[in-house]
Length: 254
Image (tube, rainbow, N blue to C red; front, side, top):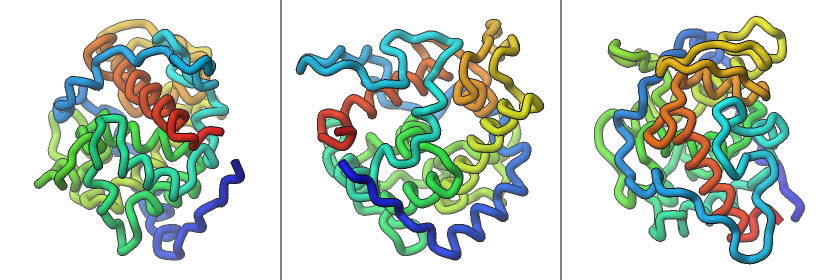
């Protein structure tokens, strides 16, 4: 399938640039998913029953040292805005997500998320999975109230401290999360990031993790927890795998 790039609007580009400069301490201490309340996300993702292989780039069995590959993490053309819109309309939760009708700066949420992700060089599916991991937003059929949407990605909300109002709003959260993921990825590549591929470090669980990809380093910089079976990067892996499998079943990954 040919994937057409969504062109970021000038206002989105300016917002991404501005928030990139502010996000240095935005998401480094994200908590263990206190606002996640979707029980099905903790269920094992079934293996393909149609003879297809698992989606390349995300392990079929959880490995805390390899959440996903760099190729998958940076594949900005995995889905188009139209394919993400179909995903919201027929979600993995057998419902129509409220995000199918949501707008960000006047554009459909699907278009805005794809545009911000591509501007930062991050796979849009990684971003959508993060929305679910942080606030269970994808599985909701009605727009949540309060801080769930205002801080959809937990960006600017360190542990045990109030959220930074600079990052309040879905538009700012999308830009903040995308640029933060990319900054930590680039920091791993450069060797001066908070987490670096090939360099062992302890999580807040605490467990020793030696990232085997820059993408994995970025995930741990964003959320320094493993929490196998209960949250952290295990949940990010499980939700991401579920979403990629669902998109594949919808034909988006052909």
